[in-house]
Length: 323
Ligand code: SF4
View 1 (cartoon, helix red, strand yellow):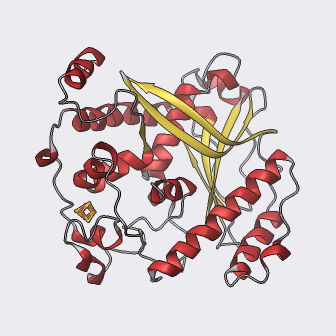
View 2: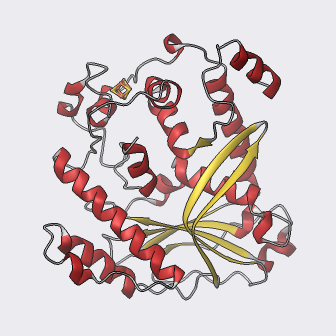
């Protein structure tokens, strides 16, 4: 849909999204999981007095406390990269949930990050154009070097160096590097599989945005897909503290078409009736709108699997919870 037709629909009061709306991994994930949730959250901007929960086995109160600990951890790490002395973990020693936060912090402090490119940019937001649409991503940390040769993967974590096949050709792959780092407090019996991480909306969207909109950080040209990778740091798996996902030109082209199709699907719909409820009611058990949709019993159904339902903590989700 062109911007002109978007404005015409807006003037006639039939357009469903603000003209300045920017897609994000959260909004597109919402749409893919449940079109009605997308409509409620981003079109109607419907507030609902119910907290979101997750498939973690925690009560709503425990889950909110878990999110709070994750938010504090993110702030401490951001301050660390900014060179600001973090608040002492002793300051929360008396808090009921302080122990887990201190464990996460001590694991972060014990993790070596020397192999990351030297320029560290915490909490960096970029906006990429996809056709006529805007796509927003906010990285916990972006580590870049526009001249550094690609290093060998460190044996401490899992995953590999960026995939070959960057836009600039094989000769340019080693001339720069950009690593998105994301702090995760995922719980579970085992670390997530590489394939699971590689197909996550967050991975694909963050890497696409980086390879599209990073020109200001690379002498006027965005990093090629082959120069980009994403590292998930795992607070609860100290034996394997991170997993790295590479990117390639083929991945980039695939994701560009996938994003265009997804956004056009969203924008081609009009009115609540074209945004149906989730087919998988297990999604509803953790959703803010579960009582509004009269699907509050969804949490009693068996989860689809520990990694089928997204149980990841994300700082951005806290902001969305507070709307
Ligand atoms: S409760 Fe279920 S149907 Fe309703 S918005 Fe949430 S996920 Fe969608």
